[in-house]
Image 1 (cartoon, rainbow, N blue to C red):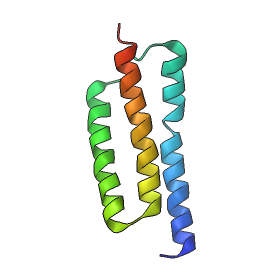
Image 2: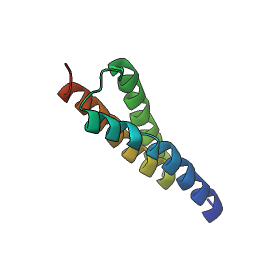
Image 3: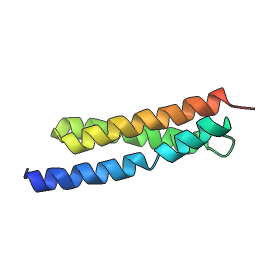
Length: 86
């Protein structure tokens, strides 16, 4: 795969992954995740696991890297939801 295509994939993965950072920070700062859906993040996390496996199978660094970080952020959101449950 060309360097330009790999770079494009890394940029796409970075943008979609960092979209979760503000949510993690907001939950942590407010100590509230009442509006976060367990079901949505569970389904989303399962999809990310499948994307990660797919990336590993096709040996795509952008897919692997983006999904490792996205899965980590998604799990953090679920953990904070559990921690701050009221």
